[in-house]
Image (cartoon, rainbow over all chains, first blue to last red; front, top):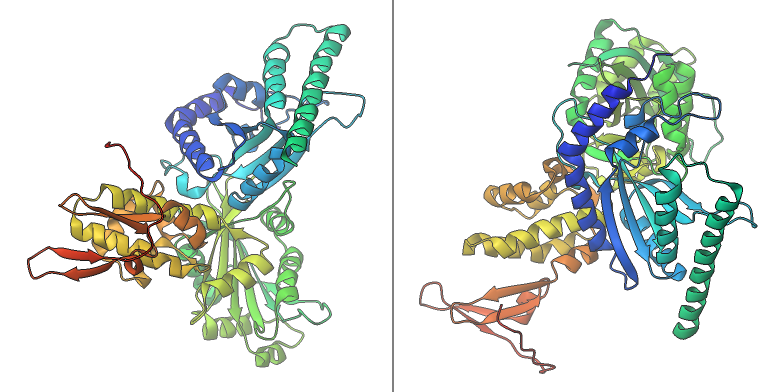
Length: 206
Length: 335
């Protein structure tokens, strides 16, 4: 198997990102804001994947030691990432309906722990086509990504994921079992807060 | 750089929608001779001819038709080609009729390509071809119907990770775009227009409302408003902005303004299903400003019903009149 030239991939990513991705992300944010006219949306954001984050993902290995991505510039589908943060869990489904009525998708996942005794990351993730009408026209030879990743989360899911990502994902720090349990505890608290706020919201609404 | 043709296959596709499946007849076409030359020209012009962007929708990163196309590009064979066109036979009715289909596999130094085309054939052909699928007969059938076809082109640098999008066309005479969408795009390819109904309608709405707001030439502004007023009549139609302009006889100067206002110029020619509800959400109201300080506002699709206009004898002067029950008075701060 030919060796993957990460240096060249990184250079290409930086070039494409600086030339096009900022414009795509900005237009996409406007596009999402137009369509997601929903009262309890806290925030809609959109950004290109940061260079180092991209190359770190591009270098990921599978459990058998083989590269996870043979063609990272084509295979990594969150080079442009968008996020919609809602107040309550009950708001997620109506927002999903709007999204599915506007955007063409190739993946939809509800990310939640399979084990009922575990707490961790939660959210709805989509891989959606970047609307062609907002795509800049690329120079010859520049292949732009066709897709972006959209996450839909509640405020608590988002707050937990941001904090957890910051302290556990980006560092090589050797987390102990007890520390991991404390992280899981915070996830359980976020889950509980979401559930109670959702119940209160529905009680008040009905 | 021109695409090289690697393989060409031809398959006779009977209408089997309400009938049991049957083995399809087909053969590989040699890469020499008159038929090859003719198909080579069709293939070379396909990036220009196929002008309707389509996408294979999925919720789990798989799609049955995309999978067969990928297989056909990776390991071309008549068996895979028959498997692909069996799906077309399964959605073809007697109205769609018998068809001669081609799959052309090609590539250049960067991209792989699969081109699929469907030409109408007559039942007499089936008798002629009998059990032996002869290339000379294929050529004759092709010559008879080469101007009326449906096609789709898929091109990508990566076979494994690409081929999610393609472009389709219909060169059949007197056929509505909606029919192409139903039979060729939705039923056979199980694809959708790449620009969604809401997204496309927002694109033209945003373009027109932006132009109406900033245009200073009164004549052009009036034409833009007229266009915004009549467009909701196109509700439900599969149409591109270019076609909208042509149908409503928009002058070339205005078409150029609209084209220039789009973030992606190629989207001007791209078909989508027009949604007047979404359009009116953006181009919701029309205001006309008079030199005496009056501003007349009404829903853009009802403005002419709300206000009666009379041209006065003095040049460029108009009298507006309206009547109704007063519901509310709003006072807005000066900007």
